[in-house]
Image 1: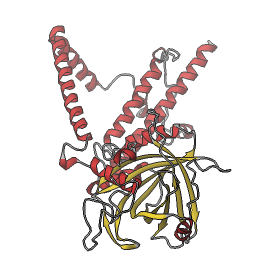
Image 2: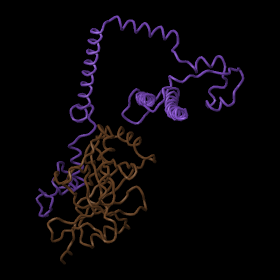
Image 3: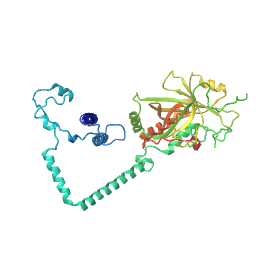
Image 4: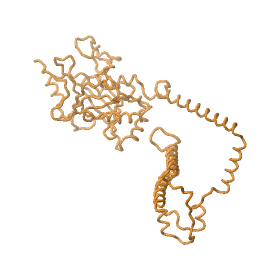
Length: 224
Length: 208
């Protein structure tokens, strides 16, 4: 019994930590939606808040939560039962503290939401509807639909990747080009050994007003 | 008078042998703002720092075939800053796993009479340029984005002309020799600047 108790405590702790992280991420996402909605974008390459970033974070945390629940050392919470022993309309200071001020009263209104184990009746109805619809199609047709969805997704992914690869080279699409490799080479050469910098060195442009004899006798080591 | 023999060995003599790890790329003028924006997000939070420097490269021709190169740099917008004298060795090539260019590096702050001193020692100015741009830091990494200006009349830094329609982007770390994991960190940072800028290890000898 004692081992089970210890296990219960450990699993509860892990679960609480995960849920706390999830709550914080949700909280900051909601804050972003409410306060930074004019600057929020779906996706951004630079470090400004983006909705997809938040979604990715939440999805990752939900995954970890699932992993924690499925972990072999985690007690099967399904076997545990929670029964409310006392319901009262009075304020409970202890509960306030433990829930960070969110649940002031342990009353008849609060319990159905917090101790819920099944979805809302409407949601349950919808789910049942969907399950019967799905069963009606038949296994073969369902398989075919799954395959065609997968194929469409992979086609789309391929197109996106190809587009990304093409624009990364920087040279194929003039309006998206952000750097010019020839310029890089010219600048590196200028900084490394002064190519194109001095007037008396042969360079592409001759500065006006300065007539120098390029074939002058300087035995410069870099001269070609 | 014969020029004194010049050694090509890395300057040691009591100090730690420092190496400069370098990755370079460029960005076109119209994409500069996007790059600055991204760098401000990625780098340490500090006031955006700009600089305007005048660099002069001096050569000392000794008996060896290749001359000894020293770089003298002064700030044009920060009065009273010391001059900066820098020696850069030949890049250490060969290790394909190393992701950055590595070369011996010695940095010294000097007083304003640096050029006179170098001329007295027998150095002659080979070329000069003006560099104007932005400086960022991330930990020990330094990122500079600057435009190079050709000086039209030698010694006159007022009449300059941009060398190209791009800004040079350099990611560098100065660290003691042997810290090769530095180049891994640099490569990871460089990945974050793609596809705006491609920072890579460029061997200057290929461009001669």
